[in-house]
Length: 285
Image (cartoon, rainbow, N blue to C red; front, side):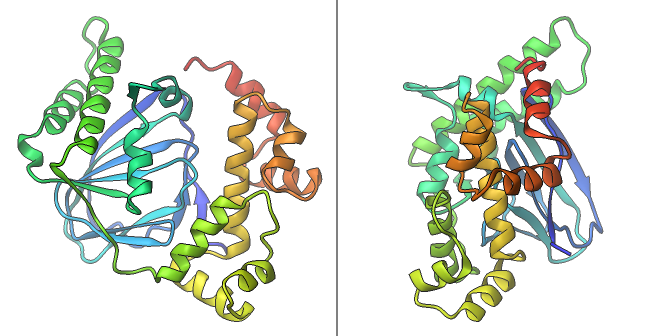
């Protein structure tokens, strides 16, 4: 059985959780249709994202973009405390214009080859202050609190992006995933519309078929074929959301036939792309 799955649906612009857990055991690889920011407050924890694994310290900020396969790894039973913020792709896209691009922090982390941002003095930072306001207002029923939470969320995202731009931060490197697997993952994401058979990828990197399949699964926890399917589905869904016709989106995302796309789509989302599009159209983002 594949050790990853799609977890959760987001029906709001954003969701915020302050959680503390112990004895969670092993968490399977999974992915979301929305972006995630995780602020790691405590715990002996590593975080695996797209074949890279990062050892986390207190107050590290983790960026997981929509469609990225990830999981936390716990090294003991110490309390795992974190703040999790889920952000819809559509909502973030509304604030991704030149001069006020709130998606910059996600892109910049990717360009740095990292998923983890470490502020030199988090507790005294404006990011921490903005997070404090958000968590302090969770669940309150004050007048216009929903609108107020949106204002506070935008303040948090602005401060987070300002921090990402500043010189007061460090992007954490990983010492786990082999550089070759990292290169392969990057290659896959850059060539989703092309031939990505195991033989084609093995030939591109001068590797044997067996070595590629074994090493990829060993270092990431999932097979190449299923990883590619996830990425192609995510790409197709983004194209559909942007107005591209379903059949054309499937083709642009690299699915050889529409029937292959439809079968994978229904297995992943539990519905057809047409029904999902109609459902999303009824939501207010």
